[in-house]
Length: 141
Length: 83
Image (cartoon, one colour):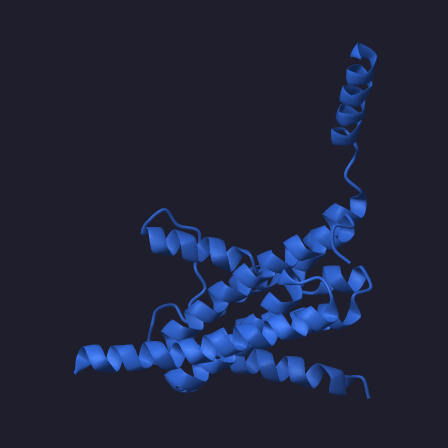
């Protein structure tokens, strides 16, 4: 009985110590840099393209509506959350900061919509990163 | 020939440069902004929340329907509260 328990615990520890496959790290990282790229790498062509179009469209619609890209801040809680959401867009956020895209302040009614579009694009990209991870580890087809 | 590929990128970049607080930004009504938002969010929800293609399409369509119907319901509720 004791032997059985021991072998079970060994098997359990072996399962937890299994190394994470490299693709499970690379796929979400690629998705963060370019939305949909992780899915494309995993040969989910249609899903990857749909994700890419959707997230890019959300982000660029947001910019076209003079949406604001949040900067790192420690001020208002909503500004901090906005920054976290924007950061999810990864490569797009980096490009936006590099080229100073987006309105600096809300200068039109649609600017507020645009800001929300950009934040949601980042949040959707985080969902896509998780999805790419699940596909990479085989939890999802 | 290859420079044609760069035209859309250049157009997008030029558009974004002018998308600050100048006169040229995209004007959308609240309704159209909400519908476009619902459309793209539903696509991603469908893909990420379901496992096979058929269910992805169904779930995406369901999310889009819920967004649009919810928008009308909330709109009417706000109208009733206002009046």
